[in-house]
Length: 397
Ligand SMILES: Nc1ncnc2c1ncn2[C@@H]1O[C@H](COP(=O)(O)OP(=O)(O)OP(=O)(O)O)[C@@H](O)[C@H]1O
Ligand SMILES: [Mg+2]
Image 1 (cartoon, rainbow, N blue to C red):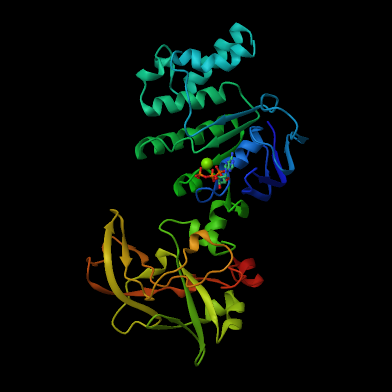
Image 2: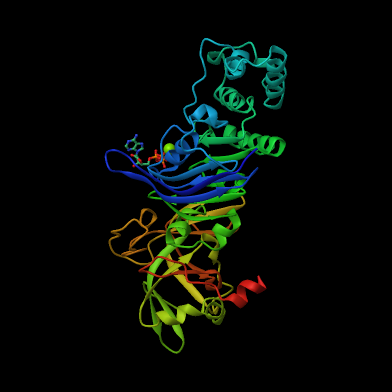
């Protein structure tokens, strides 16, 4: 096994597109790192550079402490699983699994043992004599995975390997991937669009936007302390509600959210003292869907939001309530694909509140919700960076 270290890796394609921009990332030996980001942000290019299918324009890639930039793919001891995996259609499952070992001229007994073990781990024993055409999608996916693990490589690179499967199979395969990782502990870099996959599979998640690495950390850390607006909007489902709002100094600080005026609680100022510096200016406020609740009573104090419920989606144990935009106007900038300026964030955008299943909220009705500002996030509208949390508060957490 081996670690994988990218040092200042940049890839500019001949046409001039910089797909990967000064990316430095260290995947530890045995670690499972998930790479996420919007379409076109450079995820596949990163994997292809590590695999040696693409040359880095600059920077170095090391595997197990050795710089591999000039090493051909087959000498890197890596196995890659693609979204559109191709099995050899004329070969049986057995032959598909053993193919790479046969061309490497491994001993017959050795091949039998490896294929037998892989088939057992992946539950493919009954299917060894079938051809791919006679397999279900999930079974084919398992064969593709089996072809990667049968070689026992130092590193797995997986590029959205489950995206062709239906929801139920994805969940099953996700469990299987976790078990495989526990069993073999192979260093893995895994690309996905799927929030749940990223949160459940990754020891750490690396968030990429426009070829630049935004933040790398354990799933809980990215969720609790996103470093900027992009990561805040990208990690978490339903996504964080974001709005550029005015901070008024009016007998304490007040957030002006559309028609609403919310006093900033003392706890917020203790946790994020930098908020004070925004008095008389604008700030970007972030609220997770879980920050909303039902007010305790008609005299409830604290922040309240009164808007129309546009849609109510029942999820069984909870419900997502899609709210009419608290700040009206035309939305001009899509925040999730911007890292530099944030423009009119939240203007004209609907918000989502997650409420208990018992909450009596119906589509089309006007609702009043309580807003837990103590759990709010704050970002600078110019740099998009999260306001720092006070040292004392971090130390107590
Ligand atoms: N061979 C190539 N020549 C020129 N540009 C390329 C090439 N391959 C990729 N690109 C460009 O590089 C950028 C990153 O592409 P990449 O495939 O790495 O994105 P991705 O994050 O994997 O996207 P997706 O989620 O859609 O798979 C894109 O703008 C893409 O158009
Ligand atoms: Mg891709």
